[in-house]
Length: 248
Image 1: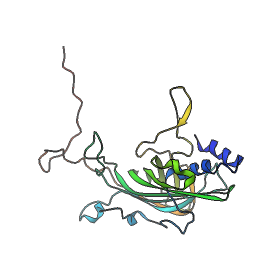
Image 2: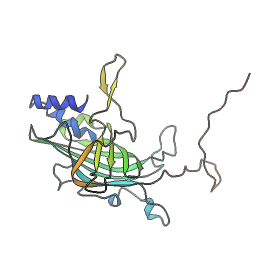
Image 3: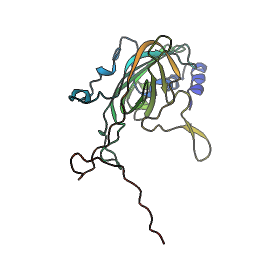
Image 4: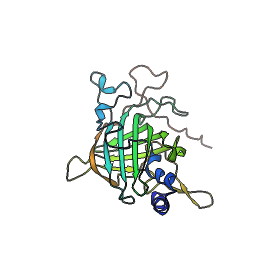
């Protein structure tokens, strides 16, 4: 269900801490205070593995980094914080149908802390990044929840989507979007509203302004496709084309 509905339930009863946790913790990550967690990370601080930037002459990989507290319209009294350590790792996650992985493959960690003021409780969780796409000062990425406080334990294993706008100046603040905030609804076969499933890199526009902290987007163009198995060294790989049915 949407955050709007869940927020109303949280304010209606102190027994709804599990619902409150889902407002943010289900997204995957966090510290209960600005000092805890990863701190004010920058894209260059991501250390989840070998970086393309370590290769002489190679372009720096796309990345998102930093920590920030946001203002969320439907929980104005709550303290909601994100910490992102995200770096692209193209063609590193083989899957069925794409044995070489995808150009959007990524790695890193997302952490979230949501202090619910009405209950004076803080719920945290963490997620493992699996996808990143960037364009100028914007990025969208996704992470699968790997750890959550007991109030949000059922979020573990779910993928959540995030977006960031790196504003770059006090007149244009950074912004964050998260998939369960306002838009991730679907309908089942009976027409009933259900929680939508998030695919890799799927996230809404960055709708929530940052009030403290700093987020940085380091953009990079999509990488070239790797050579297909059996392709001579140096030959470019081309996407497969669908076969054309034979004529009559």
